[in-house]
Image (cartoon, rainbow, N blue to C red; front, side):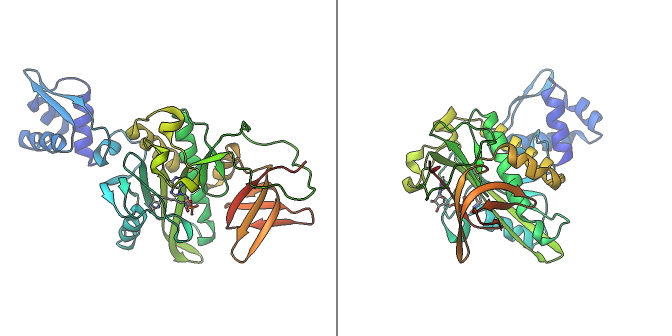
Length: 334
Ligand code: BT5
């Protein structure tokens, strides 16, 4: 948010302030104060003017200025009520040289998952894409997917949802009584394969896109889609979806988005910390998994995750390192 505008809001949040006092405090003209106040009202902030001056009486529920105000991260927010895809818009901004911009939408009309899949994004959700230009080699890009999954998980847990991460990019909620914060349990004994474990509903997904040379990322667009205040019946049934509304009741999307962005910012500043944070919330580790990778399939026990996001699967014969793929949790075989 433009610094003077933020300073106006901070001043007005503290109680009534007269126009001239505000002008003095911010070292701007009274006309400028009036312009800022009008612009803020236009953006949805309730600013009352009484005998003692101006006072902040309400912050908009959701939207760009609402999320920027009080945000503990250096992002500008471009908000859309509806947009085809925040990632597509993020890529456009990135190609124009933008950085530290978040594209945020109430709903998407052409939301995208990985590998050309669709991501349903009805109104009431949180769809956003962070555009950034980290100074890292391209091979480190997957760590931003993990960071986003951790950020979403932490914010969802604060909202009262028992969220976990399924490698690499799904935030899920267990439904089968599995309540392991992290699994230190002995991996299940192998004697054939179990079927899909089911028992998990998808709350959110992450789609990271990037451009760069091998030695350096040019930009990364990290897209996060969270089923926030939506009804699961409005989401594709075959996806076994859930939402914050269904798990814990409606969330304050402004506070949720601010939390999520602040967490993501902290993690991106310290990529080395991401894998440990991911492990803390992993539902995949210690599980029997089937991972479909481009051109092959790996079945075994998920034993570890390594920087920048590689899953280590023990097949019984060997330990295979998987860098990308679709992971399915299998039922333990007894
Ligand atoms: C993902 O893909 O999970 C990544 C989703 C990323 C969405 C965000 S929203 C903001 C930004 N802008 C975009 O356009 N995208 C990003 P994947 O792992 O491929 O999972 C896709 C699959 O999840 C689909 O094939 C469905 O089965 C399922 N699915 C679709 N919509 C869902 C929803 N709202 N909730 C749960 N599952 C869903």
